[in-house]
Image 1 (cartoon, helix red, strand yellow):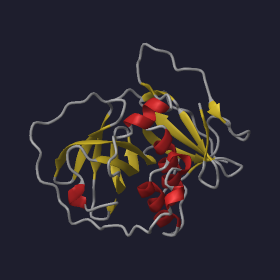
Image 2 (cartoon, one colour; image 1 turned 180 degrees about the vertical axis):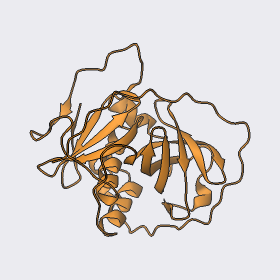
Image 3 (cartoon, one colour; image 1 turned 120 degrees about the horizontal axis):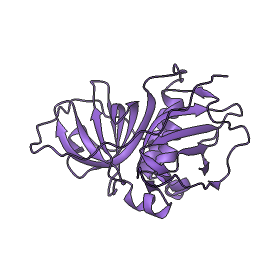
Length: 242
């Protein structure tokens, strides 16, 4: 079992939109998205695009264990603000600005790379380093709002340095959970829990995913006051949050 010191919560990056919007590179691979049954679209608050992407991830290969400390796989949801040749910036539902860097292997799900433009709602999954994510995948959320409605409906509390973190929990907190214990995971094993957690509690940035001793996952949020931890079952269903 891996152990680490729980870092203090990071402050959000202030929004500062550049004036110009350079042309993005769009020759990135388009991920094949299998169809999803209609009755599953609202399962656990997930959109059809995210559910489809989870199927792609689940059949794509095996995950690896990330080293403790430094950047780890995570993600965030938001609306695209500006684009540049190698990526874009987006703003989350709580007003946090995230810089997304893309590479030649970044995949687009739910559309073409050229569809990612100002105002597009996206879920970004990749290597998080503070408020910068190197994208493994960009999931286009058709008719999405950057997570605004879900954040409001599920009580996401924006970061405020003058306001204490709410001491509350919802759902089920796994009995196996002890803060600072577990194994940080990467790749597929991290991205599916991130997608589940972001569908219900968007607004912050996920900077790591921890696999607990019973197989469940703790999805770690920062840049919001609540929830700080979102729990996902080993079957990738939402369990609870605190």
